[in-house]
Image 1: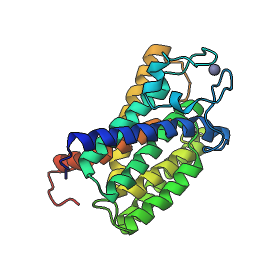
Image 2 (image 1 turned 90 degrees about the vertical axis):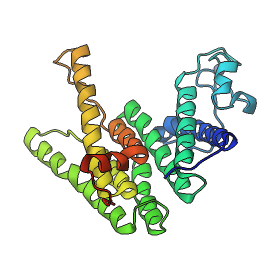
Image 3 (image 1 turned 90 degrees about the horizontal axis):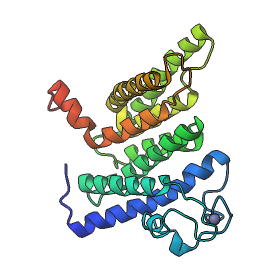
Image 4 (image 1 turned 180 degrees about the vertical axis):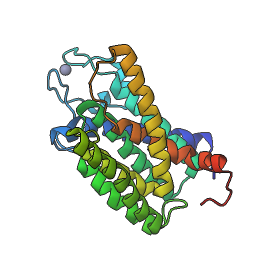
Length: 264
Ligand SMILES: [Zn+2]
């Protein structure tokens, strides 16, 4: 299903996404530090000066200020506008796929949570429970209310159980055999949340696709840093990006692979 949006709608969706991305930047920085995500307003990390509203425009401000704080000239990370741009693009793509529906709203929330987890896990090797556990509840409730296309509450609940169990068992075995934690509990709760929004088929797809991209990244890491490298790679970024990928093309790919027109 695709929605025929005009250019005005598409641009509006992009701008909405860029604003969401600006908020995600705050979440990504503050949530792992246990700070409030609504108060105080953003400050420069170098000089602690409160950033003026006119210097806080998503994407644009970075370029107007040439990547530097207006007060102290300290460098602003390029990551801020990049995350705002990606969020804008994702929001526009979701709108073009789902149109002005509740599915668009729910899946924008889901994709935004996946984006936040992507960066937080990359930075800190943690996946905040406040996102994954609340996400499980929101996913089940949204499916119960019929807001997620092709997903009833049974599939949602099945996705949670399946997503939680399929990583829990190997994680337990790995821990028993190797005596160390390979897959974190955060990954298990994240896949359960992904299951709440995508069902068991989504879990299979995400697990397959993230294992593939994760293995490629691990191999690339070995080639670059040498085989002796034991630097742990967080799995969350692979799970979360695979989940976003599933929202857009997952069903189409599953249909093509299995050639089943009534798979769902
Ligand atoms: Zn400054």
